[in-house]
Length: 290
Image 1 (spheres, rainbow, N blue to C red):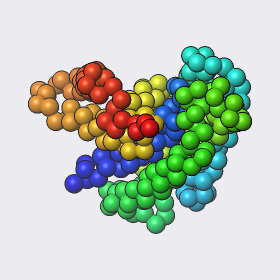
Image 2 (image 1 turned 90 degrees about the vertical axis):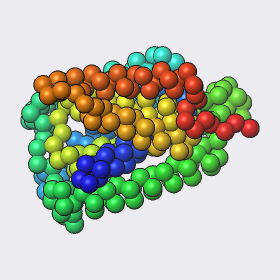
Image 3 (image 1 turned 90 degrees about the horizontal axis):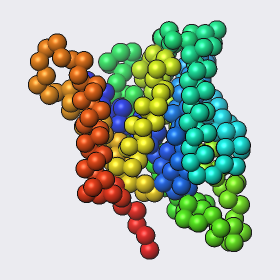
Image 4 (image 1 turned 135 degrees about the vertical axis):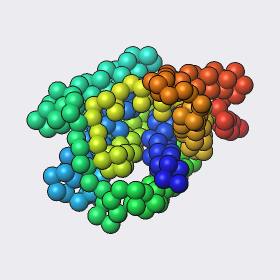
C-alpha cells in the first residue's frame, strides 16, 4: 500500500513536470532540453527557504517565482537563437545550474546535498503523511491541468500553435512571436518550479545528481509518448513511463544482480519508445487537427 502511494505521488509530481514541458514543446514548438534546470531551481529554492525557517507554502511560492524569473531571463537571449541552437543553449544552461548546485557549497552543500527538508506543518511525518501528501499533489496537479487547458484553448494558446506551425504566419497576423515564446517559457518554468518544490518536500533530501540530463530525457519521453500538443497526453505518458520503469523492479532477478535494475529500466524505456514510435508516432493521444 505504501509503495502504491509512493508511485501515485511520483506520477502526480511528474505529471506537473511533463505538462510544463508540453506547454513549450507541444504547443509552442520549443525544444527546451534544459527544462530540468527549472525543476532544480524550484527544488533548491523551496528547500533552502524552508530549512531556514520559512513556512513550506511560502517557500513553494518563492520557488515558483524564482523558476519563472530564471526562465524569462534565459528566454530573452536564448530565443534569439533558432532551431537546434536554442536547444543547445538550454542544455548548456541546465548544466550550468547543476554545476552551481555542485560547487557553491556555502549555499547548497555541494555534492553532500540538502538533507532534512521539512514537509508542510499540517502533514504527518514519515509514511503516515503519504495519503495527505498524495491528496495535496493531486489537487495541485488538477489545478495545473485545468490552468494549462484553459490557457491552451484561449486565444493565447491558439497563437502559440500558430507560432509552432509557422512563425511568419503569426507575424503576418500581428502577433509578437518573441513575446509569445517568452511567456510560454516563463509559464512552463513556473510550473516546473512547482514540481521541483513538491519533489523536494516529498523526498526530503536533494542533491545535484537529481537534476541531470537523465531527468530531462525522462520527462521528454513522457511528453512524446503521451502525445505532444494535447492536455491528457503528458499525464498518460507519465503513467506509462513510471509503470514500466517500476515494473522492472519486480522481474525475477537473482539476488546479487540488483545492479542490473537501472540498466534494465533504461532498456525498458528504450523499447517502449521504439515500439511507440513505430506503432503510434503521434503518441498515445494524437493531437486533434481540424
